[in-house]
Length: 299
Length: 280
Image (tube, rainbow over all chains, first blue to last red; front, side, top):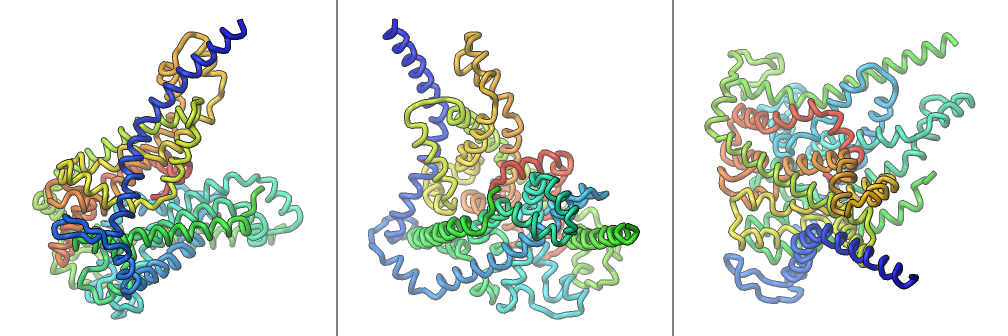
């Protein structure tokens, strides 16, 4: 009896296991073919020199890496990417947080504002970049004409990176804001009531209740946005022409990767650049995980 | 008390002023896009802030001209097909895997799920070169299949659906299993319909991601008649970058469908992004 029920259980477990494997099979197979094999393949290619027409990969060891680390443009592009992140992440997060706090109040018209702020999120970055490029146009652009200036917004190496950062902030505010609003709604109202009884008003409530209690959300947003900013491509590709004199001072590492791997067809060197990017991002992610323990307040 | 109320009112006014200024900044690019699109090029490049609106008539026919000369119909079709197949494939594979990871027990499950989590941490740029080589070898360059290819499975979606399935009460399934339903029937008839909101989130996320993506369509669909709206815009800018009304009219045509869908399904969009929190 005992034995029979045990083996019956095993039969049920076996069926369950069969269903389980059948259900995960498409996803796992897909991930292995589309993602895990490509990681290994990319790393392998980063040690190869690509022959003409993408053929005749020859193993060259660390030659690509030596070339990449010796090239000024690699370091330049890493620095450009960091500069972009230093604009997009803090400004995108802080402005979004302030807007979220405002829209979380019971005011009239909040849903209309939310719709507007979120609008850039549903637009193709290619289209967004085109209109900003037009706004930034030195001769005919709206900005220079309204402010009566003659700024080369996107071709002056000193300010082009800021101009692109502004587009990035404009594009991402709505997304960050929506995440902040859903984080705010999870903070229990009694905290604010208690604070109000103690006489803490708006700004003090914000710094003593909202900021600490929202820190898990903030950390999540900062982390996703740092990675997003470090892999920026679309905006830069659309705004910065190949002939732009400020290209060297703005192009991101993914832009450089795209140029080598697909415009020049040098897959091996492109693979090297993307491996460097991924190692760099893993380093940053690791550092952020360390910082999380220090700065994030879990209730 | 009176002064407190007064202060509250001043605060409200300040908040509204800030919100309105921000809304204005957010809307300027859109308004300028449309206003430029209906001007003649001559007028567009003689911009004067006092003549923000077209002086030489509103040339709505610019949209028609652009529509015809760049064959927008084909761009729409390609984009729509890519989005459709990616959403269907991603939802299908993710809901099955999500159910297995969230509700079933089997050996090797934890290891397999750790692969899902690892995939989510790897930046997707590292996949692109081999994916391109595969598509190229399979002869799928310049096809919809090539556009869809990297998006047929999704680690992020599996994770999202797994969380959805885990949140469902246990007794539902037990009752069904007593009624003699096998696992497949339980999944199809009882569990899957209950995760509809997670599925909608994943669908919206997948559609938005596919719509916005630029690098992949640029790489695999280099011909104008096979590419998507995003990559099509990049092509047009390369060719006709200084014809500003044409450029702006194309940009408007490329983003209007998604904006209309967003305005109609706003609640689902915002909730979908807020709950999934995916990286776009």
